[in-house]
Image (cartoon, rainbow, N blue to C red; front, side, top):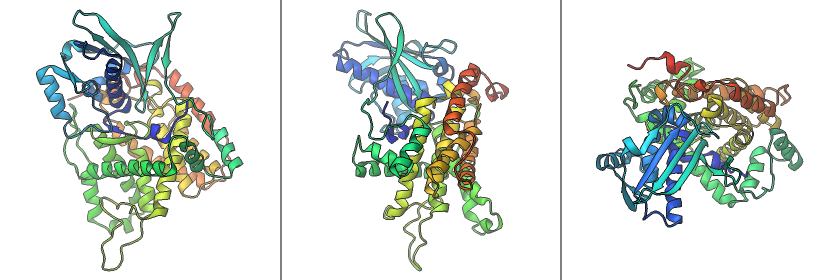
Length: 488
């Protein structure tokens, strides 16, 4: 399967890529299928059912809302996040939904959207079934979708012998520089005498021009920056019974109110990294616009480390004396789009991170429901560590080492969202992992790239650990902190 950098980094809405973005895309795909096969106008009812982890924590993750938005034709990357409450209120108040925004049918959530907390479909923990009926009660379509992490959606196909398999529709074209393992990726960089980012850049040329790749990645960076800025200025309480208070805005005020404090505390840069991660994940928990990186539950790590790079490692130049600093705008400053060299670092960061993410996607999983939070926060930490190492001058061997360190110390990390909400411990977990990614990159840069545990071995270990992990620790809210914290 040929995977693009834009498959790993997708613009969507919170709080979960697998539980919100995936179901939303699946519901929309189902409506598109009805339209394509000429069955949309004959449809009078659509029944939806969520299974496994989707059923267990779907309410807390907004899966029910996502299905309604998807049936109504909305997409995660374009839906107006400010209008979502009004859209849902209208659907629920009238008990009607316009499929694809054009064909209105009755929709009673109590009857037509069922969450099965203890039942699972056979091929993945995040399964959902959608059935369309005509006026006589006959089935027009009966489709099963799996949300496999990072917003990726696959369908179930029943084979002639009655067996089932996940049907993925990948781009099967062989890329110019294909790689399946970390070892193959390193071999390519050695053969071509280039960086990991350059290998990714050449492969992206299969789909689009270098100019389009650059523009797309800079747009991803802009969305990440906007997310941090919103998080840094937004006060209030996050949705859910725990009434979790947003902390980023207060932290931002404290950090910007006393500039001299940084001179007294050499570790204050960690507070900024924590701020960036908290801001993103509070936005995610509130259902705001984020970039899956590679998932929503881990969406704060790569933006936090990238902000650290852009604002502390490779900061824009100071403002001219007596003039306005055109390179800074918002918390910590913003990269001036005119600074080409600075943009090159941002782009190489994202390309390198995506290369590492592809290795996990291809050889293990990025789904918390499948392998626990090691597959989300652990993978994002590994991606960020590698990317930071690369843009700080690391060799491909050092980059691979940084990625390995980032995951090695997340092995076995469970996914235990309290109350099924992407808040506790998810928000703080992103901040901690962001600092760990920076440390992993610095450790790798202090070495020469040689180490005993390869990235491929740690990915294999992560996959096996996830397979051995008990289901209650994999995004079901039935184990870990989720059962030891009582909701008020």
